[in-house]
Image (tube, one colour):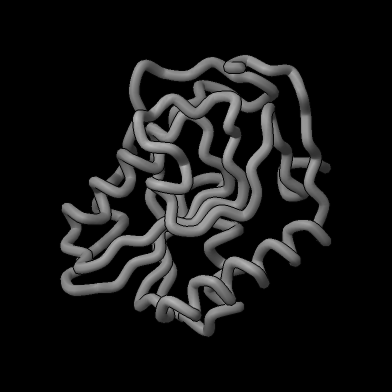
Amino acid sequence: MAGDQTLTALDWDAITTTTARLANEVRADRVPDVLVGVLRGGVIPAVLLAHALGVRTVRAVEVRHTTADGTNAAKSAAPIVANPTSLGDLASADVLLVDDVAGSGDTIARTIELVRAAGAARVRTAVFVVNAGNWRRRQRPEQMLAYIGTTIEGWVTFPWERP
């Protein structure tokens, strides 16, 4: 159910375990050339995965759908893109697009479009958490996302979001 007030707080142990598992799944399908993190929250998982995979090229792009921080924050009508040129030239690259959480699925869908427009030959996606309670795309998360850390119902916070 959208707007669920349930809060899941992940700790660093959960993040470390998720990073290792996702890295093994990605590695089994081929190590990508480039990782792209969705600013803000997806950059930390992208860097963690880059280290686990031995990939040195990490880029970031700002695509946001929530209008503020906090549990069940309001969303803009559509994802807002800032500075898509930060992706640079991804011509012929095998790209792993990484975000911390996929709620509605709109942000990741928009970011996939940007990565393809930058020339990527292959685009895979990895998210650490899917909030199934907010998912609203026709495709189920496992049809749209190549690698999923975990699925929850409700809001999630990550250790880097807490003091």
